[in-house]
Every structure is written in structure tokens, then in C-alpha cells.
Length: 304
Picture 1 (cartoon, rainbow, N blue to C red):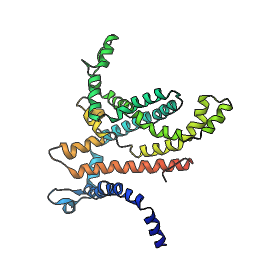
Picture 2 (picture 1 turned 45 degrees about the horizontal axis):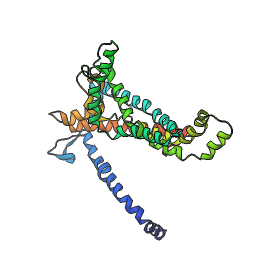
Picture 3 (picture 1 turned 180 degrees about the horizontal axis):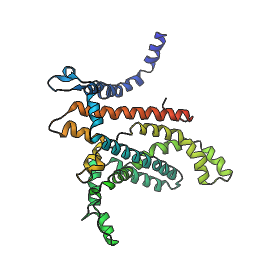
Picture 4 (picture 1 turned 45 degrees about the vertical axis):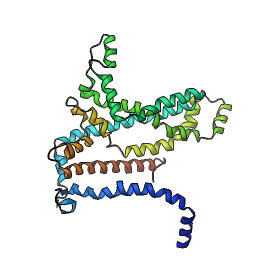
């Protein structure tokens, strides 16, 4: 058995060699750093190191759960993540379905280029564009409101607008790139199904409902499960760059709190920040497993 296994590996050695680099990346940057997560259970002191620091158990987690920030940052994080998930899930599917029925190749390529391009713009540049557009004195949005006889609005100074600005600007930036996988899935659907539907007199809407949507639904469910696993990730860089004292009530999330506790504070508390980050990861793992199990019970596609 072992000889057969080694012979099969030797036969496919180019594939195994190709795997070496990504596997090395995962081990180096994903698995080895997990060892450092233990400082969440210690009173970490830099000079004593992660193994020499005193063990305090769940004290750092208890401190976070009892803190004044816990309820607020958890509410903001879940609210923003769910908003992003709900708003961002259907639009790539709609765009992919729309492009799938465009006959003009030139128009289709143009739309794809226009929708893909924002994805490759730096987050810093995107935030700069948003700030310029929403500026209460010189911004294009407020200029348009002025033409309509309305008073200017300080969008970035109102906490109630923060999540909507983050979500819809993110949707604009990533919509085209997110629909690529759906376009690929639609291309894999047997054309004979559409030909038979056209012969039977089915409209485009019927073909979308009975052929295209069932064809991409397994992929959509898998992506939904994976996105649910990131339910506590809100896009740290963008949130931090758009954060200010006026919208902090809605803009303070777990990621920005970890950054401030660990790096932006003079008295850096690495144990406390690691505990907060570990709590976020555990919640994401629980959500991933729960949604995956729900998909299995509903007889849908699942990760395992």
C-alpha cells in the first residue's frame, strides 16, 4: 500500500511541487501565529515572553465582557457585518444574470470593465473619494442638494449614516469582482437547457428562475456559508479611516478596538487585545459551523 502511494505521488510530483509554496505560506503565516494566541490567557509582559508571562486564565475575556465597550462594539460589529452580508449577497447575482443575457459582446465587456475597476483601487483612495464627495462645503453630493434647495448635510459627522456609507461604497467597489464566480457558474450551465426552454416558449424571466438560479444556487450557498464565517470582520482599514469623534458611537467595532488597545494606546495591552481578537474568531467559527449544519439539514450544498 505504501509503495503504491509513493508511486502515485512520484507520478504527480509536479502537482505536489506546486502545492509547496501555498502550503508553506499557510503554515508560516496562518498556523504558526496561532501559538501566540495563548497570550490571551496570560498577563503578557514583553521582557518575560509569551511562555514566561503569568497565566491568568479567562481574566482577559471576563474583563472584556464586563467592560463598557463590549455591548457597543459587539452591536456595531454585528450590525455592520449583517448589513454588508444582506446588501452584498444578491447584487452580484443580479449583475451576473443580467450580463449573461447581454448579446452585445462590446457592451458586456465595457460593463464588466467599469464594474471590475473599482476593486483594484486602494482603500485609502476610496475613502479619500468618499470624503471629497460627502464634504459638507465642497462635496458633489451637497452641491446637488444645494441645487435642489436643500441644506447641506455633514454625512461623516452623523453616526446614523456611517454604516450605510461603508456598506454601499463597499458594494460599489466590489460588485463587479464578486460577480465573476457567478458568471463562470452560469457559463457552465448546459446550453441545451436554454435551447429546450426557448423551444417551449419560455421567457427570459422563466429561464432565469428555472435554469440559471438553480444552476448557481449551490455556489451561492457555499459563498454565503463562507461569508457568514467572516461575520465579525468589518473591513478594519476602511472603518478606521472613516472613523471620527462625531461618528464613533456607530463606527467603533471590534477590529478598531483591538488596534487601539494593542497599538494606539501608550499602555499597550497585548493580552487584552488578543483576547478580544480570539473572541471574534471563535464567534466566526461558531457561525460558520452553525450555518453549514443548517444548509445540510435543508439538503443544500455545504462545506462538509
